[in-house]
Image (cartoon, rainbow, N blue to C red; front, top):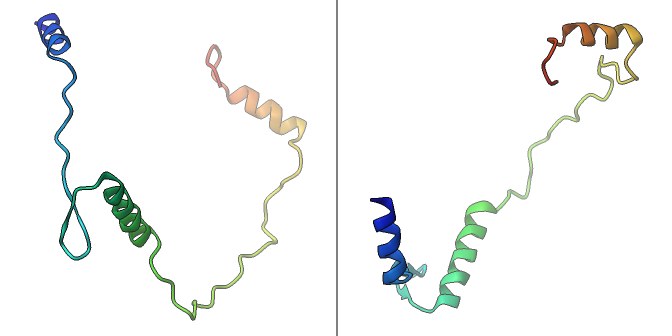
Length: 91
């Protein structure tokens, strides 16, 4: 059945999906491809880049002195990690 479907599609040629019109901000239908692309660019710029306020809220700086050891691992830490790995398994 799948072979019949593939053969039929091959013989009938590639069919393009019908293009859907794009509307401008004023509600007019845009048929020119380039104008449609420009409208999509404009739409997503407005959607993804909302205007920011002129007075941003005061945000405190993140603490820089954290209780985290950023030095190289010790021999004990390495051997403990190796013991915790299940044998025969990839890490």
